[in-house]
Length: 335
Image (cartoon, rainbow, N blue to C red; front, side):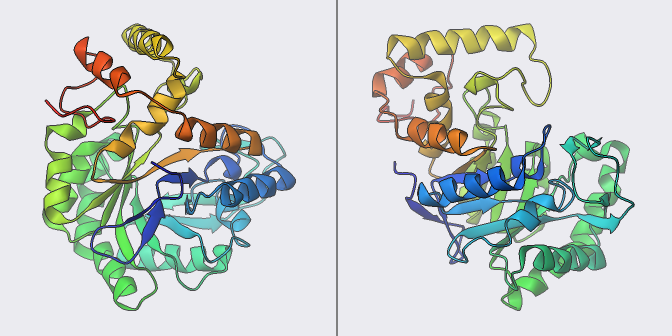
């Protein structure tokens, strides 16, 4: 599996590299990234053969998109709709809002309506300096984000906002449409009701969780829907970080990580390499998307993605119940 291997999204003409770049970090996620570092990171991404980049208006309240404006048109790009940004007075330096530090002076609100989707797209066109954006993903539908407002937002999207996506696709302003979410339930709800091309699913298909194998991936394959596996490190824990799903990890998860790492160590494989390569073995996965904030992180992840992993490692993880037996991995046959 090569970083630059290209995979087609669903039944579209959009192609993405096997390893993708998540651009939330250059929107100052959790900590500021200066312009020079962001520019150097993007150069390392493209020089390293990563040809797919994902962003969103939410990332730095427009900052991430703005920093991507000079990106070569050769790179495949996705952004998101579902939030609309409105101008605000510039907050004091060091201000964190929604996890982003020193973002651009805009605030966000959810809007999954036809007009909201169109306005979000038009604003992204301006920030990205692109007339056409390869993929548009509806951001953060689902119960976990919206709680008691979930049904209302879902109905607004299915009855109104979805029409905007199909119009943009018919006009050639985007080539692929889908979801960008963190939960599996909303994926099943939407693919049952709507004609879409792709799901970006963050943190749900990793070494620590393979619930999409319970039927979601099979249904995606049957409908011609590709999957982008984002957050393969589960918010950093599988790459030596301290967070699991954006929070402190529970004890049972830490125990599982140590057990998986012990198997990796026996095979002289970094845990992060196994975590980064695992999702791409499933045929429905078109790209594994990881966030990176600095050129050094890009170089490290490129090395991890290319690190040799023996088939015996996957076999051993399955043998002790640390990986589902039906998860495609390396040269190991599915159970």
